[in-house]
Image (cartoon, rainbow over all chains, first blue to last red; front, side, top):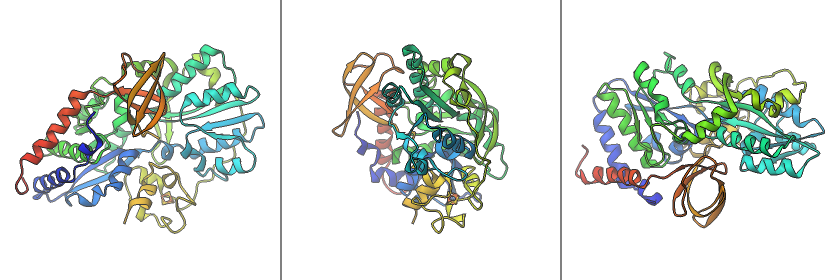
Amino acid sequence: MISDNAYRDPQVARRYLDKLASLTAGLTTPITLMEVCGTHTMAIYQHGIRSLLPPAIRLVSGPGCPVCVTPLSYIDRAIALVRRPDTLIATFGDMVRVPGSSSSLIHEQATGGQVRIVYSTLDALVLARKNPDKKVIFLGVGFETTAPTIAGALIAARREGLNNFFVLCAHKTMPVPMAALTADPQLNIDGYLCPAHVSAIIGANAYRFLAEDRGIPCVVTGFEPLDILQGIDMAIAQILSGQARVDIQYCRFVKPEGNLKAQHLLKEVFEPCDAEWRGLGNIPASGLRLAPAFEAFDAEKALPVAVEPLREHTGCRCGEILKGQIAPRQCPLFRTVCTPENPVGACMVSSEGTCAAEYKYGD
Amino acid sequence: MCLGVPMLVMSIEGDVARCEIDGVQREASLMMLDDVRVGDFVLIHAGFAIEKLDPAQAEETVSMFRAILAEGGGPT
Ligand code: SF4
């Protein structure tokens, strides 16, 4: 493999920045690119890319942080589930600190709730095997990169006849909300940097309708600093020449058709459904629910609980952050009331959240 | 959460690969990939190998970095 350093050479970065500056020098209105994925947001902050770009290129952060877009009602249901004496919640780390209406999973854990952080869905299966007296519930949150790993675990669970493993499912899919954001006149998105690893699964062709029907240039971009600069360069080239297609900068891992085997897993276990996005509201056909053959694993159906009434946090502007409408500093709670130690909203909790990125790397 | 890491496949047993990067070893399920061999680089996400590195395409990307450097001189 070519070493990571090859994607970080500061001299090459300088050349891209100079090129972008001269390409956009005469522009009177800036070009707006949205980086959809939370990992891009983190990398862009970490390497200070936003401040290095010429003023005529504006980067806005999108809704691609899976923890951040998970609605409050979902967190509240997970909290209600962990309060049952017979349950154990298994989840990726970021979810435990997200504030619900009146509690959080980490708070529930401190008061006796069974919560375990796992690295993989397969670890959650191990927990189910080891705790036959508990109902092990995995928090199924994430986009098309994560959903096939849940599909894989469920297929294994069914094969084994594990009947104490469940998923609380809130998976979301990427291209549909991107289309919704394109229609937002306030945002004026000129081009997309499409998520890297989601695209490894769904393939670059999944964005073609955005380019072909809506005229929005798309570039599937990797996460290293030079990947991002090259991706921006490819997007700007399309925009300035008045073209719109899907280019793949991250071609070392992403193919036009994606990973067909993973797509097959998704089709076997899930079916499309409408989904509620924090900040973006309900978007038709933008989520995944368990297909009828896997319904027995659905925590929401199999383990009914009373969920407390919703209480949104006043002042938190995660919704506007997730739509790219404001930057974290425009939220009055940023850094004063809301910090990573004491997060008010999910965007400050997740390692991919825009507020957390600004807090950690912003100047 | 979507943080995938490229790792080198060290050994394979059934559907599971032992992978390494920077001295860190991890097991990864090969459920989503066919034809993975020892010596391949795979992208690992949450315990699953989700894609194989295409070395020719990686070379292509880096050759574009070299090309932009070679253009040299002042701003283009
Ligand atoms: S700074 Fe905190 S309160 Fe403000 S939008 Fe971000 S997460 Fe919400």
